[in-house]
Length: 115
Figure 1 (cartoon, rainbow, N blue to C red):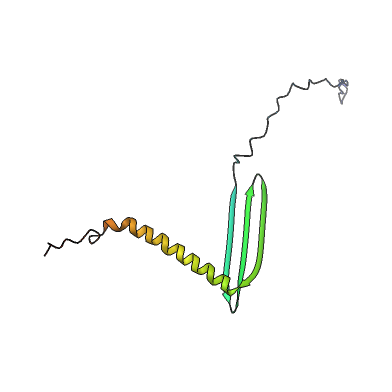
Figure 2: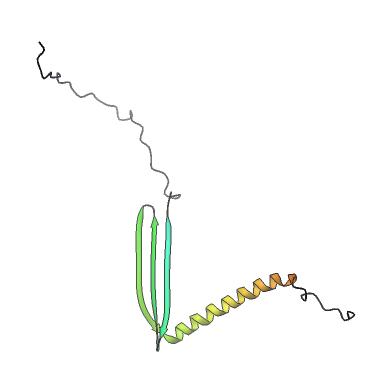
């Protein structure tokens, strides 16, 4: 009859060379697998003041960062921002319409000999 439990004889740990295991280096951080950025800014005017709320969130290099702030500024600064935004929008619209004007039938020069 066998003796239970069977015990193993103790062995000395073997020595491992330092270069025996190939170490895999991490990938370059310049080209991450996944990253995103999100930003939100709201400007509203009530009375003589304009309120600004902004939030920015980003995930880059395995690190999530979030920033938020709120503030007030003078109403004239708000009106100046609105005027600049409107001028920019109208300028971009004019460029688009100018590039598409050749499609319109009345875009060519009017010939006086046509009746």
